[in-house]
Image: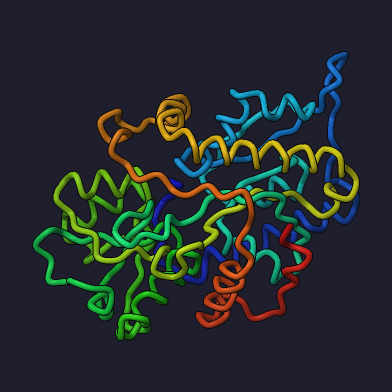
Length: 328
Protein backbone atom coordinates (compact mmCIF):
# COMPACT_ATOMS: atom_id res chain seq x y z
CA UNK A 1 0.00 0.00 0.00
CA UNK A 2 2.73 2.48 0.91
CA UNK A 3 4.50 3.50 -2.26
CA UNK A 4 6.59 6.58 -3.09
CA UNK A 5 4.31 9.19 -4.66
CA UNK A 6 4.49 9.78 -8.37
CA UNK A 7 2.58 12.37 -10.33
CA UNK A 8 3.20 10.93 -13.79
CA UNK A 9 -0.14 9.31 -14.52
CA UNK A 10 1.17 7.32 -17.49
CA UNK A 11 4.24 5.89 -15.82
CA UNK A 12 2.86 3.24 -13.53
CA UNK A 13 0.39 1.60 -15.98
CA UNK A 14 3.18 1.32 -18.60
CA UNK A 15 5.66 -0.18 -16.08
CA UNK A 16 2.93 -2.54 -14.87
CA UNK A 17 2.16 -3.74 -18.40
CA UNK A 18 5.86 -4.21 -19.24
CA UNK A 19 6.38 -6.23 -16.05
CA UNK A 20 3.36 -8.38 -16.88
CA UNK A 21 4.65 -8.96 -20.39
CA UNK A 22 7.98 -10.17 -19.06
CA UNK A 23 6.55 -12.60 -16.55
CA UNK A 24 3.93 -13.79 -19.02
CA UNK A 25 6.77 -14.82 -21.32
CA UNK A 26 8.26 -16.81 -18.45
CA UNK A 27 4.90 -18.39 -17.76
CA UNK A 28 4.43 -19.46 -21.36
CA UNK A 29 7.90 -21.01 -21.33
CA UNK A 30 6.83 -23.26 -18.48
CA UNK A 31 8.02 -21.37 -15.40
CA UNK A 32 4.62 -20.99 -13.78
CA UNK A 33 5.36 -23.26 -10.83
CA UNK A 34 3.57 -26.26 -9.40
CA UNK A 35 2.25 -27.14 -5.98
CA UNK A 36 4.82 -28.56 -3.59
CA UNK A 37 3.77 -31.48 -1.35
CA UNK A 38 5.09 -31.16 2.19
CA UNK A 39 7.28 -34.08 3.12
CA UNK A 40 5.48 -36.82 5.05
CA UNK A 41 2.54 -34.60 6.01
CA UNK A 42 0.22 -35.25 3.07
CA UNK A 43 -0.33 -31.52 2.72
CA UNK A 44 0.49 -29.16 -0.12
CA UNK A 45 2.48 -26.02 0.59
CA UNK A 46 1.37 -22.88 -1.24
CA UNK A 47 2.50 -19.29 -0.98
CA UNK A 48 -0.07 -16.52 -1.07
CA UNK A 49 0.74 -12.87 -1.76
CA UNK A 50 -1.29 -10.54 0.47
CA UNK A 51 -1.29 -6.88 1.51
CA UNK A 52 -1.09 -5.97 5.23
CA UNK A 53 -4.53 -4.37 5.32
CA UNK A 54 -7.94 -5.07 6.88
CA UNK A 55 -9.26 -6.63 3.66
CA UNK A 56 -7.28 -9.88 4.04
CA UNK A 57 -8.21 -10.66 7.67
CA UNK A 58 -10.29 -13.70 6.62
CA UNK A 59 -7.30 -15.63 5.26
CA UNK A 60 -5.44 -15.17 8.55
CA UNK A 61 -8.52 -16.32 10.46
CA UNK A 62 -8.93 -19.27 8.11
CA UNK A 63 -5.42 -20.46 8.87
CA UNK A 64 -6.01 -20.08 12.60
CA UNK A 65 -9.35 -21.90 12.45
CA UNK A 66 -7.87 -24.79 10.49
CA UNK A 67 -9.96 -24.34 7.35
CA UNK A 68 -6.93 -24.67 5.06
CA UNK A 69 -5.33 -27.57 6.91
CA UNK A 70 -8.67 -29.37 6.60
CA UNK A 71 -8.19 -29.07 2.83
CA UNK A 72 -4.62 -30.46 3.20
CA UNK A 73 -3.11 -27.06 2.46
CA UNK A 74 -0.27 -25.36 4.30
CA UNK A 75 -0.23 -21.64 3.57
CA UNK A 76 2.75 -19.31 3.67
CA UNK A 77 1.63 -15.69 3.51
CA UNK A 78 3.98 -13.18 1.89
CA UNK A 79 3.22 -9.48 2.23
CA UNK A 80 3.61 -7.01 -0.62
CA UNK A 81 2.85 -3.32 -1.06
CA UNK A 82 0.00 -3.91 -3.49
CA UNK A 83 -1.53 -5.91 -6.30
CA UNK A 84 0.88 -4.40 -8.83
CA UNK A 85 3.66 -6.37 -7.11
CA UNK A 86 1.61 -9.47 -6.38
CA UNK A 87 0.38 -10.11 -9.94
CA UNK A 88 3.87 -10.58 -11.47
CA UNK A 89 4.90 -12.77 -8.52
CA UNK A 90 1.94 -15.08 -9.12
CA UNK A 91 2.66 -15.17 -12.84
CA UNK A 92 6.29 -16.12 -12.27
CA UNK A 93 5.34 -18.90 -9.85
CA UNK A 94 6.88 -17.22 -6.80
CA UNK A 95 3.36 -17.18 -5.32
CA UNK A 96 0.69 -19.74 -6.16
CA UNK A 97 -2.15 -17.39 -5.17
CA UNK A 98 -2.50 -13.68 -4.60
CA UNK A 99 -4.87 -10.91 -3.52
CA UNK A 100 -5.51 -7.85 -5.64
CA UNK A 101 -8.17 -5.22 -6.21
CA UNK A 102 -10.60 -6.06 -8.98
CA UNK A 103 -9.64 -3.28 -11.39
CA UNK A 104 -5.97 -4.35 -11.40
CA UNK A 105 -7.07 -7.86 -12.37
CA UNK A 106 -9.31 -6.44 -15.09
CA UNK A 107 -6.41 -4.39 -16.48
CA UNK A 108 -4.24 -7.52 -16.57
CA UNK A 109 -7.03 -9.48 -18.25
CA UNK A 110 -7.39 -6.82 -20.94
CA UNK A 111 -3.68 -7.26 -21.71
CA UNK A 112 -4.17 -11.00 -22.23
CA UNK A 113 -2.48 -11.96 -18.96
CA UNK A 114 -3.75 -15.48 -18.04
CA UNK A 115 -5.09 -14.90 -14.53
CA UNK A 116 -8.04 -16.65 -12.91
CA UNK A 117 -9.92 -15.45 -9.85
CA UNK A 118 -10.62 -18.28 -7.40
CA UNK A 119 -12.42 -16.57 -4.52
CA UNK A 120 -14.05 -13.34 -3.47
CA UNK A 121 -11.76 -11.12 -1.42
CA UNK A 122 -13.55 -8.08 -0.04
CA UNK A 123 -16.65 -6.03 -0.84
CA UNK A 124 -18.36 -2.77 0.01
CA UNK A 125 -20.76 -2.71 2.95
CA UNK A 126 -23.18 -0.92 0.66
CA UNK A 127 -23.86 1.78 3.26
CA UNK A 128 -23.01 5.38 2.36
CA UNK A 129 -21.09 6.93 5.22
CA UNK A 130 -20.53 3.54 6.81
CA UNK A 131 -18.23 1.83 4.33
CA UNK A 132 -14.56 0.88 4.65
CA UNK A 133 -13.56 3.34 1.93
CA UNK A 134 -14.54 6.99 1.38
CA UNK A 135 -13.41 10.41 0.23
CA UNK A 136 -12.52 12.69 3.14
CA UNK A 137 -11.99 16.44 3.50
CA UNK A 138 -11.10 18.76 6.36
CA UNK A 139 -13.98 19.45 8.71
CA UNK A 140 -14.29 23.08 7.59
CA UNK A 141 -13.90 22.33 3.87
CA UNK A 142 -16.42 23.98 1.50
CA UNK A 143 -16.71 20.60 -0.26
CA UNK A 144 -20.08 19.26 0.85
CA UNK A 145 -20.98 16.61 -1.75
CA UNK A 146 -19.44 14.47 -4.45
CA UNK A 147 -20.13 16.98 -7.24
CA UNK A 148 -18.08 19.57 -5.35
CA UNK A 149 -14.95 17.47 -5.98
CA UNK A 150 -14.95 18.67 -9.60
CA UNK A 151 -12.13 21.15 -10.07
CA UNK A 152 -10.37 19.97 -6.90
CA UNK A 153 -7.18 18.07 -6.09
CA UNK A 154 -8.05 14.58 -4.87
CA UNK A 155 -5.42 12.19 -3.52
CA UNK A 156 -5.59 8.47 -4.35
CA UNK A 157 -3.15 5.66 -3.62
CA UNK A 158 -2.84 4.66 -7.29
CA UNK A 159 -3.58 6.61 -10.44
CA UNK A 160 -5.79 5.08 -13.12
CA UNK A 161 -7.24 2.30 -10.99
CA UNK A 162 -10.26 1.38 -8.87
CA UNK A 163 -10.23 4.51 -6.72
CA UNK A 164 -10.06 6.97 -9.61
CA UNK A 165 -12.80 5.21 -11.59
CA UNK A 166 -15.17 4.94 -8.63
CA UNK A 167 -14.57 8.54 -7.54
CA UNK A 168 -15.21 9.70 -11.10
CA UNK A 169 -18.39 7.64 -11.12
CA UNK A 170 -19.90 9.03 -7.90
CA UNK A 171 -19.01 12.60 -8.92
CA UNK A 172 -20.79 12.20 -12.25
CA UNK A 173 -23.80 10.55 -10.60
CA UNK A 174 -24.04 13.59 -8.32
CA UNK A 175 -24.06 15.98 -11.27
CA UNK A 176 -20.39 16.96 -11.25
CA UNK A 177 -17.81 16.88 -14.04
CA UNK A 178 -15.16 14.25 -13.16
CA UNK A 179 -12.89 15.40 -16.01
CA UNK A 180 -12.12 18.49 -13.91
CA UNK A 181 -10.69 16.46 -11.01
CA UNK A 182 -6.91 16.53 -10.59
CA UNK A 183 -5.85 13.24 -9.06
CA UNK A 184 -2.64 13.17 -7.03
CA UNK A 185 -0.96 9.86 -6.21
CA UNK A 186 0.09 9.41 -2.58
CA UNK A 187 0.48 6.35 -0.33
CA UNK A 188 -2.56 5.80 1.90
CA UNK A 189 -0.65 6.68 5.11
CA UNK A 190 0.29 10.08 3.61
CA UNK A 191 -3.18 11.05 2.37
CA UNK A 192 -4.64 11.99 5.76
CA UNK A 193 -1.69 14.30 6.45
CA UNK A 194 -1.91 15.84 2.96
CA UNK A 195 -5.59 16.65 3.51
CA UNK A 196 -4.80 18.19 6.92
CA UNK A 197 -2.01 20.35 5.47
CA UNK A 198 -4.09 21.48 2.51
CA UNK A 199 -1.70 19.91 0.02
CA UNK A 200 -4.80 18.33 -1.53
CA UNK A 201 -8.46 19.29 -1.22
CA UNK A 202 -9.69 15.75 -0.56
CA UNK A 203 -8.41 12.20 -0.32
CA UNK A 204 -9.78 8.74 -1.00
CA UNK A 205 -8.82 6.44 1.87
CA UNK A 206 -9.68 3.01 3.22
CA UNK A 207 -9.56 1.68 6.76
CA UNK A 208 -7.76 2.21 9.08
CA UNK A 209 -6.90 5.58 7.52
CA UNK A 210 -10.58 6.48 7.25
CA UNK A 211 -11.04 6.15 11.00
CA UNK A 212 -7.72 7.91 11.65
CA UNK A 213 -8.79 10.85 9.48
CA UNK A 214 -12.28 11.24 10.90
CA UNK A 215 -10.82 10.86 14.39
CA UNK A 216 -8.70 13.94 13.66
CA UNK A 217 -11.69 15.97 12.56
CA UNK A 218 -11.95 15.13 8.87
CA UNK A 219 -15.37 14.67 7.31
CA UNK A 220 -16.61 12.05 4.85
CA UNK A 221 -17.93 13.45 1.57
CA UNK A 222 -18.93 10.27 -0.23
CA UNK A 223 -18.43 6.51 0.00
CA UNK A 224 -17.08 5.88 -3.49
CA UNK A 225 -17.40 2.09 -3.32
CA UNK A 226 -20.93 1.95 -1.89
CA UNK A 227 -21.95 4.83 -4.14
CA UNK A 228 -20.79 2.91 -7.19
CA UNK A 229 -22.47 -0.41 -6.31
CA UNK A 230 -23.77 -1.57 -2.90
CA UNK A 231 -22.39 -5.05 -3.65
CA UNK A 232 -19.12 -3.89 -5.21
CA UNK A 233 -16.49 -6.64 -5.32
CA UNK A 234 -13.44 -4.54 -4.45
CA UNK A 235 -10.85 -7.34 -4.35
CA UNK A 236 -10.38 -11.01 -5.22
CA UNK A 237 -7.96 -13.90 -4.68
CA UNK A 238 -6.47 -15.27 -7.89
CA UNK A 239 -3.99 -17.64 -9.49
CA UNK A 240 -2.86 -18.31 -13.06
CA UNK A 241 -4.92 -20.25 -15.55
CA UNK A 242 -1.97 -22.62 -15.97
CA UNK A 243 -1.71 -23.34 -12.25
CA UNK A 244 -5.48 -23.82 -11.95
CA UNK A 245 -5.46 -26.30 -14.81
CA UNK A 246 -2.50 -28.29 -13.47
CA UNK A 247 -3.56 -28.21 -9.80
CA UNK A 248 -7.33 -28.41 -9.80
CA UNK A 249 -7.54 -30.16 -6.42
CA UNK A 250 -5.35 -27.56 -4.73
CA UNK A 251 -7.35 -24.69 -6.21
CA UNK A 252 -10.66 -26.28 -5.20
CA UNK A 253 -9.36 -26.73 -1.66
CA UNK A 254 -8.14 -23.13 -1.51
CA UNK A 255 -11.51 -21.86 -2.75
CA UNK A 256 -13.44 -23.99 -0.24
CA UNK A 257 -11.26 -22.82 2.64
CA UNK A 258 -11.56 -19.18 1.59
CA UNK A 259 -15.37 -19.44 1.54
CA UNK A 260 -15.33 -20.80 5.10
CA UNK A 261 -12.88 -18.07 6.08
CA UNK A 262 -15.10 -15.36 4.63
CA UNK A 263 -18.14 -16.75 6.43
CA UNK A 264 -16.23 -16.90 9.70
CA UNK A 265 -14.92 -13.35 9.39
CA UNK A 266 -18.37 -12.01 8.57
CA UNK A 267 -19.85 -13.73 11.64
CA UNK A 268 -17.02 -12.92 14.11
CA UNK A 269 -16.07 -9.22 13.94
CA UNK A 270 -14.35 -9.35 17.34
CA UNK A 271 -12.06 -12.11 16.07
CA UNK A 272 -11.33 -9.99 13.00
CA UNK A 273 -10.23 -7.06 15.14
CA UNK A 274 -8.10 -9.37 17.28
CA UNK A 275 -6.33 -10.96 14.30
CA UNK A 276 -5.54 -7.54 12.82
CA UNK A 277 -3.08 -6.97 15.62
CA UNK A 278 -1.03 -9.95 14.46
CA UNK A 279 -0.19 -8.65 10.98
CA UNK A 280 -0.80 -4.88 11.01
CA UNK A 281 0.38 -2.00 13.15
CA UNK A 282 -3.05 -0.47 13.63
CA UNK A 283 -3.43 1.41 16.90
CA UNK A 284 -5.78 -0.52 19.26
CA UNK A 285 -7.89 2.61 19.79
CA UNK A 286 -8.38 2.90 16.02
CA UNK A 287 -8.91 -0.82 15.59
CA UNK A 288 -11.98 -0.93 17.82
CA UNK A 289 -13.67 1.90 15.89
CA UNK A 290 -12.86 1.12 12.26
CA UNK A 291 -15.57 0.02 9.85
CA UNK A 292 -15.13 -3.53 8.68
CA UNK A 293 -15.84 -4.35 5.02
CA UNK A 294 -18.21 -7.05 3.82
CA UNK A 295 -16.74 -10.47 3.16
CA UNK A 296 -19.03 -12.32 0.72
CA UNK A 297 -18.50 -15.95 -0.25
CA UNK A 298 -19.04 -15.26 -3.96
CA UNK A 299 -17.87 -12.70 -6.49
CA UNK A 300 -20.61 -10.31 -7.60
CA UNK A 301 -20.24 -10.56 -11.36
CA UNK A 302 -22.46 -7.58 -12.13
CA UNK A 303 -20.28 -5.29 -10.00
CA UNK A 304 -17.13 -6.61 -11.71
CA UNK A 305 -18.71 -5.84 -15.07
CA UNK A 306 -19.52 -2.35 -13.81
CA UNK A 307 -15.89 -1.79 -12.80
CA UNK A 308 -14.86 -2.98 -16.26
CA UNK A 309 -17.29 -0.52 -17.87
CA UNK A 310 -15.95 2.32 -15.71
CA UNK A 311 -12.36 1.42 -16.60
CA UNK A 312 -13.26 1.47 -20.29
CA UNK A 313 -15.06 4.78 -19.89
CA UNK A 314 -11.98 6.33 -18.29
CA UNK A 315 -9.70 4.93 -21.00
CA UNK A 316 -7.89 2.45 -18.74
CA UNK A 317 -9.05 -0.52 -20.83
CA UNK A 318 -8.90 -0.36 -24.59
CA UNK A 319 -8.81 -4.05 -25.49
CA UNK A 320 -11.51 -6.76 -25.18
CA UNK A 321 -11.97 -8.51 -21.84
CA UNK A 322 -12.47 -12.24 -21.31
CA UNK A 323 -14.39 -12.22 -18.01
CA UNK A 324 -15.41 -15.87 -18.40
CA UNK A 325 -11.74 -16.82 -18.14
CA UNK A 326 -11.05 -14.42 -15.28
CA UNK A 327 -14.00 -15.00 -12.96
CA UNK A 328 -14.67 -18.20 -11.00
